[in-house]
Amino acid sequence: MNKQFSHAATILQVKDPLASAKWYRDRLGFDITFEWGDPVDYVVTKGEEAVSVHFSKGDGKPNDIKMALYIFVHDVDALYQILKAQSVEVRSPIVTHDYGMRDFDVIDPDGYVLCFGTHVERLNQ
Image (cartoon, rainbow, N blue to C red; front, top):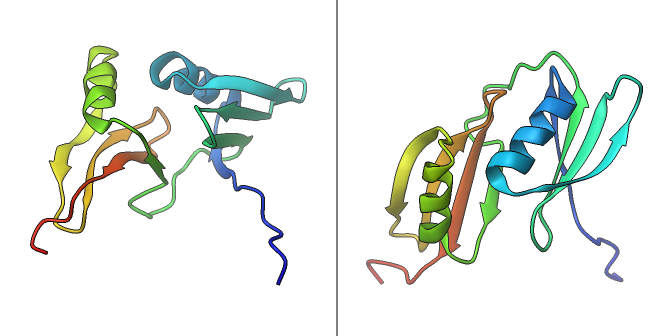
């Protein structure tokens, strides 16, 4: 089969797409790359490299899934310090897991859990 897939985007339903996108911009360093509607009811944000999060007008209630996004980063420890300095609500502190990931969780203003992580050497090999 030929490779058909280019990339994926996560779409979160939120009460106020523009406000949510601004939080991602101001607190996480994402860029707002697209807005649609009057008033705005769809917004696209982009992080470094290939991370894209879209916001769509909805009831704003996250589902019961624990994790909404897992974002792989180059230096999780540096990002942890930056986000703490930005007063981002940390849901779980940074930890290294035996399966080879070092990560931490934050909560966005709509209640979605975002996990940021870096591959590390597996413990218990």
